[in-house]
Length: 411
Figure 1 (tube, rainbow, N blue to C red):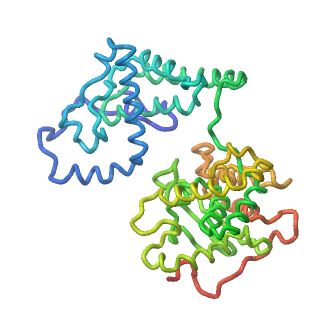
Figure 2: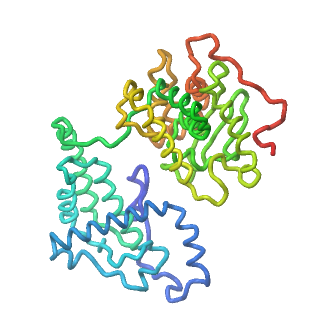
Figure 3: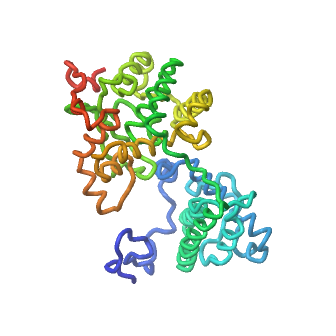
C-alpha cells in the first residue's frame, strides 16, 4: 500500500495506507433506523445548496456537450441514475436523471469540452476561475458517486489549466477578454457613500457600508452577523465571524478590532452601531442578528443591501466616475478598497500579514497558523480603517467608554 511518509500537505484518501482487501464487517446489514436522515442533516452543511446546484448544472452541460459532439463517448461516459439512486438524499441529484461515469474517465474528452467552451458567445475568453470550476465539479461529482478519478485526469487537467492561464494573459493583451470582477472602491468614494446614505436617511446602507469597510469583508460575511460575534476589547470592539467562504468550519478565523472615529462621525462605526441598535430595538427582542430578521434565510440582507447601494450609486453616477468606472462598481469592491487604502493610504502601512489576516486571505497553511495569533498589527490596521490618520497626533485617541460591564452582552 502507498506510504504517507513521502507526501506533504493534504493527504488524500488514495494516498493513505489502507486495507481495502478485507471485507467490510456487516456489509449485508441494514443501516440503523433514521441513520440516513441524521447523517444527511449534518453532511449537507459541508457545502451550500447553491454551490451544489451550480455543480450539477455544470455536470449537465458536460453531459449535453458529449451527447451532441461526442456521441460515442457519451454512450460509455454517461450513465442513467435510476429512480432509487436519484432519491438518495446524500447524492444531491436535484432531479437530474444522468451522471458522469467517473472511474476510468477519459481525460481527453473532458479537455475537449474545456477547449470548446473556453470562449464566450461573443468570442471573449472566459476567466481561468470559470474553467477551474468544471474541474472542481467533476471532482465533487466523483465524491458524491463514491468513485475515484484516474491519475491522468488530475495530471491532464492541471497541465491544461496552467497553459490556459498563460493563454488568457496573451488574449488579455490582445483585448480578447472581459473583466467581470469589481474594482477597489477608494476611500474618497467610501466617504461619499456614507454621506449619500445619510442624506437619504438610509441607515441600513450607511451602517452596513461602515461594517463591510472596517471588516475588510465580503457582503456575504456581514449578512449573518449577530451580537454573539461581538466582544468588547480594551479600546475597541472585537468582531469575529462564525465562518467564511474559504473556512466553513471556522478554524482559521481571526478577530477584527474596530475603532471609533470621534473626529468624523459619518465614518465612525461605533456611532453607526449605536444608531442602528436604537432603530432595531424591537427586532432585537426576538432576534440577536444585526441585519437579518427572525426566520429569514441567510443572504437575504446581503441581497437587499447590494440592491440598495446600487440604486444609491446610480443616482450619483456623474460623481462616481470621478473616482472609478461606474460599470466596475460593486459592493464587493469595499473589501478591495479598504485593503488598498490600508496599504497605500500612508507611508507607514500595517504589515501585509495583518491585512491578509483581517481580509481572511490565505497566504500559506504554515504561516496562517502562526499569524492567527499575531493580533497586534490588527489594532493598528483597525485605527487606519476607521478613518484616523496615522500621521496625526490624534491617531491614538480613545473612543467613548461604557460604565456598564460587558455592554455588548447586556440585554
